[in-house]
Length: 185
Image (cartoon, rainbow, N blue to C red; front, side):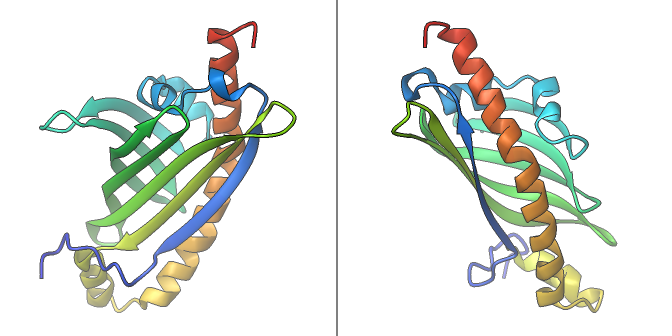
């Protein structure tokens, strides 16, 4: 079995958070925001966890967002490839490099970003993040004598805290961009 094969039956972490964006749906374009997010703005969206971001493409031309962040003291480099890249919904999938005791491994991360219109003319931004271990990640845990359930429980707490920090700040960033580009909105 390949070390990069995803153990799809195991959940490492999952978190869904929402926040209000005080802008009309037609003024919001998550895909454009995500692929043109300035590095400093990304860092402002979860200080001090967010370290750097950038946009590029895969070898075959698919849009990709590279995010570097620290979660619970561990560095993670996410190579998010767009599966869905629309103004009101993006589904980004990454085989992410994650720092673990004794080196580096990989985890599979799905980041689902969406906005929905609310009755009052605002929007609800939802930030849904889930991760699953790879076989290589499980092998590293086994080599170190660590229990997956314990590691996952600790990571779950850290991911929830991180998502609670970044979601309202992402919503505020989306709002600023929407209102700057559509001032009459």
